Image 1 (cartoon, rainbow, N blue to C red):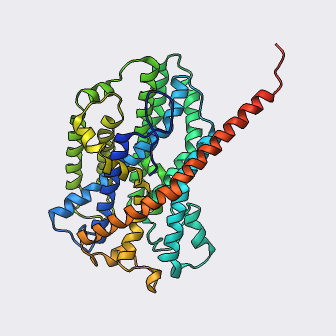
Image 2 (cartoon, rainbow, N blue to C red):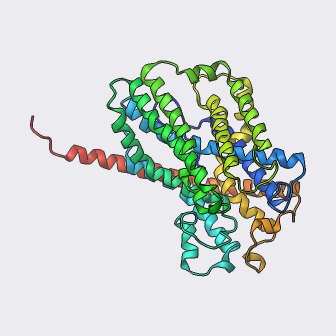
Length: 428
């Protein structure tokens, strides 16, 4: 869950997007509330029932994770979409990869090492046990039966990195296809076609990973292919942005968001309520979904992600309410450090529940210790602890890594320019 730099009708820059920062803060907070509620036994799980309305409402917050993938699709694909539709220079692949890896890996490696030392040391059974999470293979290659304590939510990191690596190739293929059109509108329409395929692939993968023979929570469920629909929504928003820039026209979605931004959020609220009811499932329970339940859930997630993000990223949306909710200082700060908060909150839960190698025994899986601490107690500890650790991580690890990436990218850009100047010109 990386941090956005900016979205605008211009090029790039190192500015922040205040509304996106605030939204990211709320989304991260909601994800943490879900996980704390699970650890505290508020949410039910198989033989541990949930019979309170609080469990139903909190479990519905699982709708808050997919928008992060939409943001990634939007922010990362936008320069490629602009190159195809507007005609701006294509991003340099080396610089792009340096930026992405230095943004996501240093903070992740820090929490992975901490989890291995503090929680999983007594479970180590060989070198691959240690290398697998460090190489981002812990959700691709079968590992320990009980997984890695504290690293459960980090399945999103390999998923994101897979997208980072695939995006330049996908963008090149899309570009070849789109350039067969002569106008910005024609190119935009051609770029949308493969994104529709992405949505269908994500839905098909959801069916596959929820078939009965796959069992609950298979490795394949956590692969990025199941989340291509959310990436496609973000990439579609990037295409609309580039199209609007190239033509000076206002897409229909933009006009709707500009006229009635709060109507989008009201729709998102309705989707959240439906998700709480869990059609075909058990409200308040975190059991692995059946195929019908998973399909309904995926469609709800796709709709929610678009409705919650569109008014935030569409230009010229004026709403005092949205600004008050998203651009206040506490939530903007929480959004800036949200990557660290997301990475560390499970480690804090294990430590507070005294479940891990540092306490003298190999860790038990989280379902085995559900309910050992109350919800509000655990939430307070996790929030305070993760904010402190994430703030330290942001200023001592993430920001230095981001500054390093800018120096490396600037250096490679100067070197490339010098090489082009030294290259002998072909006589006319």
